Image (cartoon, rainbow, N blue to C red; front, top):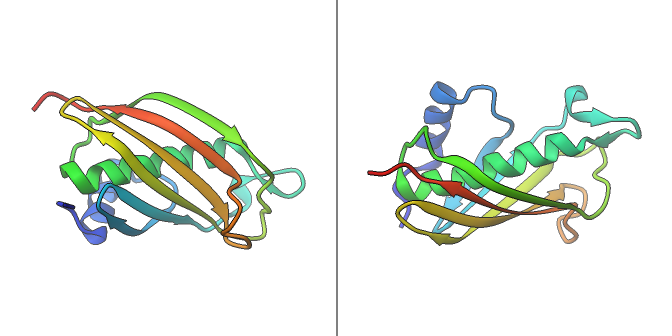
Length: 137
């Protein structure tokens, strides 16, 4: 069951993490979807979306999936991150992240994120597995 809405998460992030990338499109049971309007600052030559942009965006998407389940917690932090770049993402289209939590315990959350180009939402451009350390309550 989610404990925060999209609007509540956006407001919370605006307060504690205003430099984050992307906007929350939806949250669900153990999941979140975000969209990033790709700008010049996200590009590498090609023009393609840069690796650091996609990694950071995937990390935020998993954080949002966790927030939707546990509520506003600024100190939930990434403890492990593994990224596979599968294909280039054109800098001419938004990118979309679908985050899914695999396990959410009292002290650790584990999940995966697939990032897609909005031009082709059938083939992921990035696949991430990551874990988050959750503060003691």
